[in-house]
Length: 250
Image 1 (cartoon, rainbow, N blue to C red):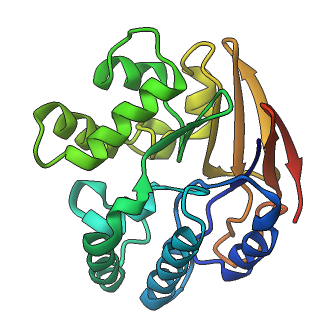
Image 2: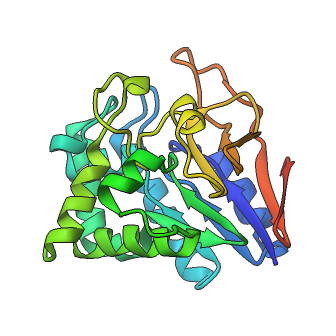
């Protein structure tokens, strides 16, 4: 089993093209969310990338995983999910897109012994919204995806889904940081013990690995930019082969 993990795209078509060209060499491709928004990009750029991802997903059924990030939920739903970069025109386009094709997205994925979410799940958030029963990557992913698919029709799903709006002090909030908002330092301080996770969200200079409370934690948001559009990271990716993670370049 060979998996490619792609950090936050934020409308970067050149990164998406690299992934498409390399896709034939992988059994699974996991996108970590935050497809929309970037410094001074047009709303149409966000919408067009989503269309491209949908087409790629349909061309590779069962091979592509599309996770949702905080910017994606912001432009989709606004209100309590709104974050920096929210644009009313992007909102109109993304909301319409999600109404038609939202079923292709997930909040979490379990693969090769790892839990994949956009920003990472802390023990505090797990305890409040998902309970404490011996969490495994598969159990957590199932619960989060149930919340995504049933938040308007099931009370427990609604509570969990609304809990995704929680922003911690690491990102200027005061709540328990959620799996779409947890900052790198927040996850390192309060990981779920022995739960291996791969996340994006926090820009890093390269794909980075930490060990904390018996958990292996990888961070892969390497495609983000400073406000002057200079790169923060080195555009590295993660590759997982038979449960072993390594940093690669395409």
